[in-house]
Image (cartoon, rainbow, N blue to C red; front, side):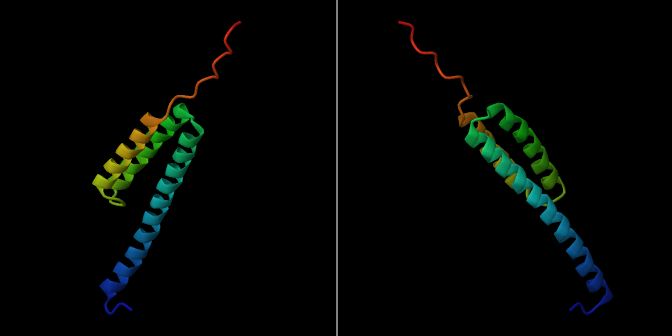
Length: 98
């Protein structure tokens, strides 16, 4: 229980910030799981589009202090490495002519 008026205000402010931070973090996790599903399905072009959205969201979260700048950079790096490791989806090879 806060003892002073300023502590009460800080408690209210902290609760608002906590709610906003959790909203942003939840969105980041949602984007990241969608990205992982696209990679698992081998949809490289769609995953690249999602990576751009995810990178932007990570940068915005770092800019507003929700996550640390280094964490955003490290996550973007790991996600791009995973994208580059995926082979592009190709059509099955035609059967050899006889």
